[in-house]
Length: 221
Image (cartoon, rainbow, N blue to C red; front, side, top):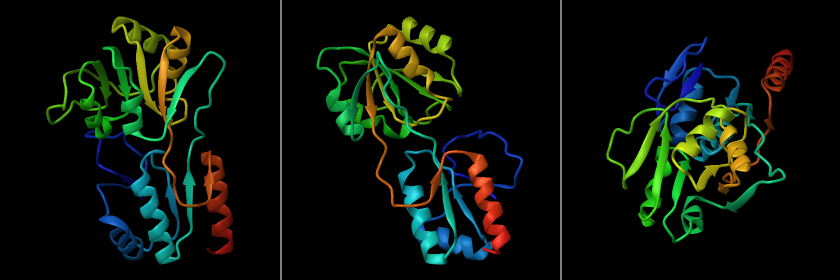
């Protein structure tokens, strides 16, 4: 069973039975695991979906269900990168300059509100879906779904005369092009670090997940 959180209006189709929506916290997820006789849980959420990951750890502990996390490796600085690393979104807001700048916020629509504290900037946002409610500040909104290419990101940043980028350290290849483009253009990147999560078994590839599933199935776990 493939579970979507429900934040995207038209999620990508999956070749598996699919459900959409939350579970109702730890207790709701634990009830679902018991009701559906779930024997294994794979946490393949976004690296910043901290609440879901924490709930999964707690619910699997409560139900005695084996859990593994598929978590792509974070990006690491390369020669030429100009990163300002921050612990969270509020720290990223504080790291922006006071002088007006053209800022590309690549952080998802759930996290833009704190940037209203610095309305002097011209913000460009990129969402998978058009915003359903008014934004807390004036912004140029791009509606587009990745993966994105280096050439496309360079063209977008140049066309909007972007001078600062704010990004979450999501890792992976689908969203990396903006980081490579920033290096090419010499732009500073405010990089938000990943949230702290409970200790859990984690791997970085689907092949490792399948190996784990096969091993546990053979053991009858």
